[in-house]
Length: 72
Image (cartoon, rainbow, N blue to C red):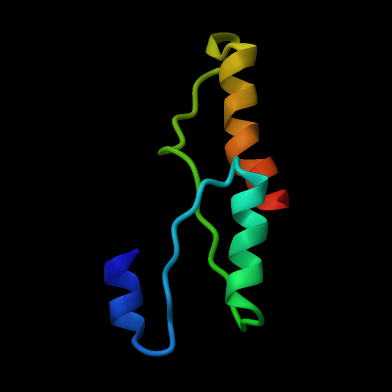
């Protein structure tokens, strides 16, 4: 992220936060105010396994980070 924001130059900013923490997300948007663009990336490298080899806990963890993190 640091390299990307440096390459983009001013006024680009980079911020890291825990997408599972709704309070941190609310505080972030309160802090930054209005902005033009948002690039959202979250989670681990997506390792696709067959459905039969994926436990419900693993599937829930992915949804918590990728879906609910973006939703919040």
